[in-house]
Structure formats: structure tokens, C-alpha cells
Amino acid sequence: MSADEFTDLNQWAGIINDKFKNRDIDVCYNLAMMTRMDELGKDQHLRMSFAEFLEAEARVANQAMHPEPWLEDGPAPERDEKDTPMWKKLENIMPKLIM
Image 1 (cartoon, rainbow, N blue to C red):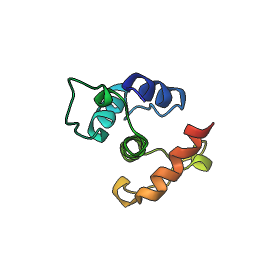
Image 2: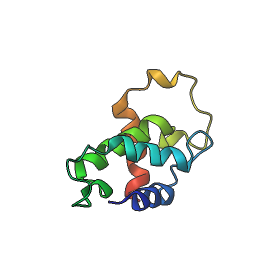
Image 3: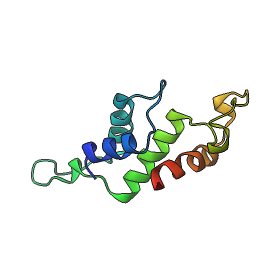
Image 4: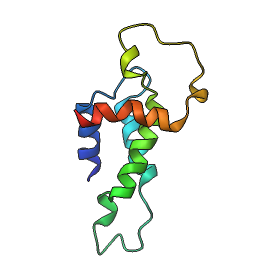
């Protein structure tokens, strides 16, 4: 998956909000990419593997901090973002990516 495809996927899913912009998606993509030995002879550094995709989406979920789907219409409970476990952040973002 290229950087543009990753950005398009997250825009289509509606993950962008006031705290999480397009530029943040690019940062998550770049941080998830592994270092490659040969960037001149191959183009693997321009495409994401599945493991890199999973890490990038975990970074997106961690930074975007979407509320639970059933609480989007009502007021969000007061809690610190640091208190939310990572599995819960991933669980909250997955329905957006699947639909």
C-alpha cells in the first residue's frame, strides 16, 4: 500500500477530526515503515507490507482517539486519553475501516 492509498483509506473511513489531520496520517505511515537495505534498486520502501499496515493503523488509532461508536451522538465520558488501553482504541477504529 502506498502513502496515498493509506491516506485515502483513512479519509474515506472518516478518521480525520479536529485533533487528527491529514499530515498526522502521513507521519503514522512513515513511522511504521521498516528500514530497507536497497532503496535504489527496489521500490519496497514506497509500499507497505501487511505488518507495517497494522502498525500504522495502530498509530492512527492511538493518535486519533475516537470515542466509542455508541457514544458518538451523546456526551463522551470524562476520562484521560492516557487511561484508554490500546486494544480499546483499536476496537473503536476498526468499524470505521471495515464499512
